[in-house]
Amino acid sequence: MPGYRPEPDRDSRAWWDRLARHEFAVQECDACGTLRFPPRAFCAACRQEGWHWRETVPEGTVESWIVSRRPFVPGHRDPYLVVMVRLTAVPGALVYGNWRAERHPEAGERVRGTFTQVDEELTVLDWAPESRIAIRSDGNSPAR
Image 1 (cartoon, helix red, strand yellow):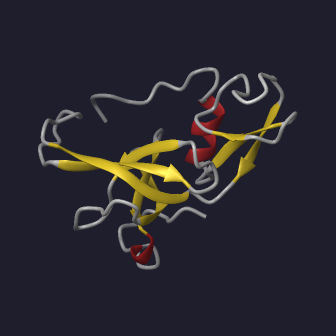
Image 2 (image 1 turned 45 degrees about the horizontal axis):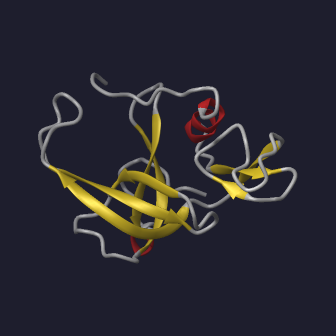
């Protein structure tokens, strides 16, 4: 896939590896138990370094969205919709992804993540209305 690709760094590499295995996880602080996303070296609540991954269901509510009419990836000309989702497991965390429905989202709408394999090396997390998750015919799997 030409164009922009996520660049995993020291803090996010393990998260991208999990996503490739169709696992969604957030960090949990070993000292205070605070859940956090995106991955970071230190806990914002207690400033400690110790943490572990905690697998969770990628679900939340639509906070906002945009319709992009400018191609972000060469070769993709259609307008596409990007949603900002507030995670249920980590209410302070916002996650972005493509919208996987034929209609526009609604503010506060319940959504669930779906894993989309872009190519052999990249899997991303997209979002669909909870009511649509049960029916999938595109070959991509709903998140656990």
